Length: 198
View 1 (cartoon, rainbow, N blue to C red):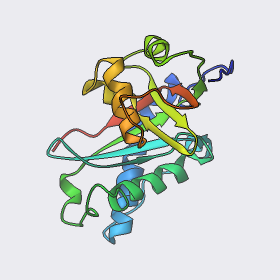
View 2: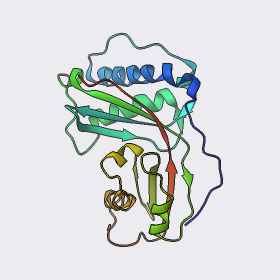
View 3: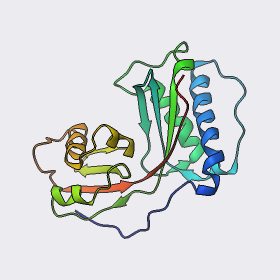
């Protein structure tokens, strides 16, 4: 169990968040439409899309999850990461069949931009749960070669830290009833935007 004292930084500043959100949503939708062969003219470009960033793209159909793929570390430009994850959410989420061209108009897209993950120190899972901020923190857990993450949005379904952690352990292929061996964890926050449901 380890700690990092790096300062958490938000990748999208408040001053540009209002105008950037609709642009990110437009680029995500255009990327999926391009992959399906039905794209119109691309959205405008902006300097912020060329800065390094990490995104998650979540797709919903009639309010139900239809795909969710993302990155937890900023390893490429925001625009490239967004486009990659948008297409992956539509085509490569193994829980669902690929999105069809006919489905696309009815899909609701949500884009989350992640802060840099910050490792946290804890001596037990009870202490880890006590340090989590429900509704605010995204969480990544690591155990050997296994890892998994939940976005802060998952707190809406799992508001209790113990249930949140147990479900995340299950997602990582770990036994929810047993302590995580050689555990490490990191938290992050998101700035998110969502299209209005159709």
